[in-house]
Image (tube, rainbow, N blue to C red; front, side, top):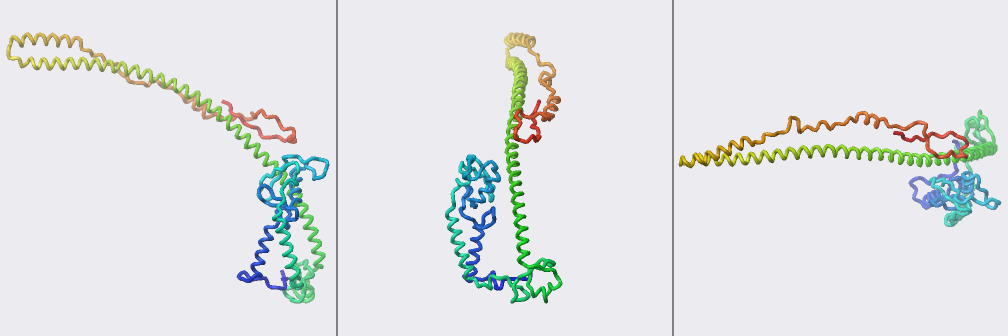
Length: 366
């Protein structure tokens, strides 16, 4: 663009007081911009619960677009308590009382800062030389920017049109182009604001749908978990019954086996004692005594042999393989548990939904 201010701004590395003051004022100006109208706050300024500030008029515009049933202050209608809108900066939900936006507290500190800022800006503009406020042509230092080149789409001066690089271009007065574009921009802003209001309404509706979706999902998860908990309880009860049958037969078999082992141990202990007695008798030197004692021991051996308990469990007695259950069919059925399509909850249809078809809720069937 072939124009510039007729003064040099402070450089990035400047350390003079003017540079620091300019940066401070610029930062302050950024903090005093309303997030809705993008202009310096206009009093009164209200503070939202999220600690963000907004012009009361802008807050009223947002509120009325989000709550079309609410009427402006002073009308015959009463503001609806509990009406709400969202903060334009952080999207935090603001709930209003029956006074509407007029119930929001004013931020007097910000209003005082705005007054001080405007006083400083007015003083700065008064102190500025008139030639510093006029945009001058870069190619012709003495010429003001007063026309607009339609061909190159850039502001320029009369000398550039007569003698300079725009002499063959189509130009128009800068003021007429300014008014035309300002009108177009105003119309565009109005259209964009209307579109934003519509988008905001759609967003609010979708946010409500999100909340409904979360609630419905939570309810269905709880119902599904309850159904599965019931199945688990049934399986656990049946498992304990079947495990009890196995344990009972195991205990009966072990009791019988241990009884046989005790009897065999008793017979074995008696036979060992008899063998020890026979060995000692073999050392008896007196034949009469040996014969007499040997007869007694032989009778005991014969009686022990006749009474010997050779009972033992049948082949495969220890097997428990007959306790078998077939769970394949049940496992397949459990793995195939699914939702029954077309079965929704018992909620009544909202009469204000405009007849729009909603997605069906699915419930589990076993």
